[in-house]
Amino acid sequence: MPKLRATVHRGTPRAIALLARALQRGELVAVPTETVYGLAADALNPRACRSIFRAKGRPTNDPLIVHVHSLAQLDQLAIRNEAAAAVAKAFWPGPLTLVLPKRSCVPDIVTSGLDSVAIRMPAHPLLRKLLRACDRPLAAPSANAFGYISPTTAEHVLDGLGNRIRHILDGGPCRIGLESTILDLRDPKHPKILRPGAIERPELERVLGRRVSLVSRHLTSAKKAAIAPGMLTKHYSPRTPLELHAKLRVPRSTAPHADEAFVFLCPPSALRKTKAPAANVFVLSKTGTLDDAAHSLFATLRRLDRGKWTRIHAELARGQSALAIAINDRLTRAAAKR
Image (tube, rainbow, N blue to C red):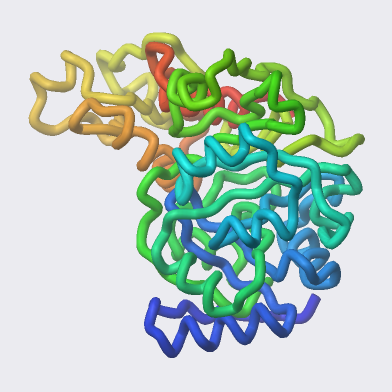
């Protein structure tokens, strides 16, 4: 692959038009979404989609999510059942991906040869403008090297893929910071969450009028095609070893742990009494909300991975809210052994 250096574009009308033409030519563009940054290509162009896998070092049996700007585009790509129509009306545009039977126009490279396709309608205003401008559905997994921590800023993309792609659209930090909820609706009578995200399971059950199960088992290797992206046991992983704790304690003295980092979801009581926490103590949410913790999780892991820490200790989220489950899902797979 020739050496490149990506250009970071602001979201001006001129930049949107330029990037739309690049996508129509079959080029790759890193794009902002409300979840994480994605690496986009024309979903109906097999050669363009194959270059996503090359740029990321992603195995071709890990399918891509296709992003659309309208229900008409959805119907072009997939067979929409009543359940899909109901949840699309309730949650789109937004952080929900639907797995549905695909139509023949969707290239096999996008779906890893499966007869289903993962589709969502993103909410980020710049990506929606770009989708309309290029008038193509866009396949877009996270814009990072395969298996590494997902990017939530344009700078993260530049650091990881800056010498492999030509274009990055800067839409600011991602609002949510965790990948979309993936809902399998191939059998609308048995809906399943394949990947937890920001959308609450009770909300989905209310709209669908039936129980929604949560798939907790993931693939231990990429030897066969997954139904949807992000199904591997180990994923979203820093290079620094990560150790998880149901309840993390503030180290009484930093001396024995000077080379280890401690990540809390919210400020523990021991920290509230100190004006300046130790240099190896980090808090994801100063407000104590899971929204803030999710928003800063990947950025914090990336920052710590650039440091000289020998180990990262992270606290798991408590409770059964959608974000607590999603945060713990990402942390558990980030800490899984290779």
